Image (cartoon, rainbow, N blue to C red):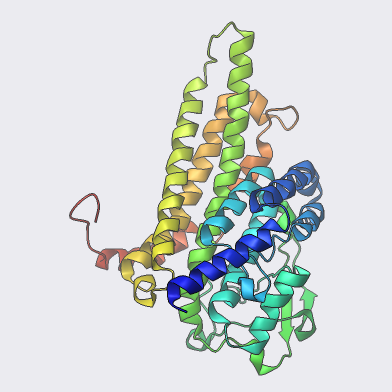
Amino acid sequence: MNVREAVLTVDETQTNLLEQGPSLIERVARTAVAAAADADGVDRDARFPHKAFDVAREQKLLGVMIPVEFGGFGASIYDVTDICYTLGRACASTAMIYAMHQTKVACVVRHGHGIPWMETMMRRVARDQWLLASSTTEGQNGGNIRASAAASDQVLLALAKDDYSLKRTLGWETLGMRGTCSTGFELKVDCPTDRVFPEAYDKIHAQTMTPFAHLCWSSAWAGIAAAAVTRAQAFIRKAARSSGGQMPPAAAHFTAAKMSLAKLRALIAANIEAFARAEHDERALGSLDFQSSITLLKVQASELAVETVMHAMRTAGLSGYRNDGEFTMGRHLRDVLSSPIMINNDRILANAATSTLMSGIPASLRD
């Protein structure tokens, strides 16, 4: 069997799996409905979005990226980012949890083949719909994952519940993204050695963790922005109808919100395309241009998402500012404000200064 025949066989298997039940679009839509219905309560009570993830498990969304051979759908980066975007429009906390889960799934999928434990984990994610969490910060290093007491000896582990214990050390009372419940814990691990990825962490971080994290997070933030723009559009239409077609004073902000959202979506789409082209090319993934682009995506997308939601809120004025009413955008604004400070943009820009200086300036528009 040649490579083309092998690819066609996998694609046909995936199609057959999806034909046995709802399409991926239908599965995501059902989950988004549940997430949206519970979003205000999740935000108000700062509780985990259990209802959304109950439906996500029923719809087999947690294992969509697991290869078909291990029981999943073999979903692509296009599929996963679209899911994050759709969930972001419904409930930001649900979208961010899902985005972080898929980032960890990607690490297992892309670096776990041929390792019995990692392949077992893939099967359990697909079959039992395991939700993967992450512990990636150490002490007082904040969100700087590559800063460590032993940076040259960092490794990544894939653990089951029996492999570790947690002791809560910090509370969680935040402005937005309240359903993510990312409280502080002391993590103690006692596990077999096969839980450790044999590949160097710097390779996993550069080739998988950073690209998937920044693409999935950005897609979730874009979803929040799109939800705010949708409410702003509804406000404009209602205001115009009630005034005989006269546009409200802040209509210009709606135009700005639409433009900002379009730039955000185009930015994410371009980076998804770039990653998809280089996904299996280690040299391309490790190139200075790709690493700079995928790192700075987080900064650009987060700033554009905040800008978009702010324009949307100003479109609706007091109707968007108030916490009650059909055009309220307080939750969207509070949630999206987490994006520039989640792995702080200032830190990313400071760390990227050297590499961006070394990167060449394009000689043409299509370089």
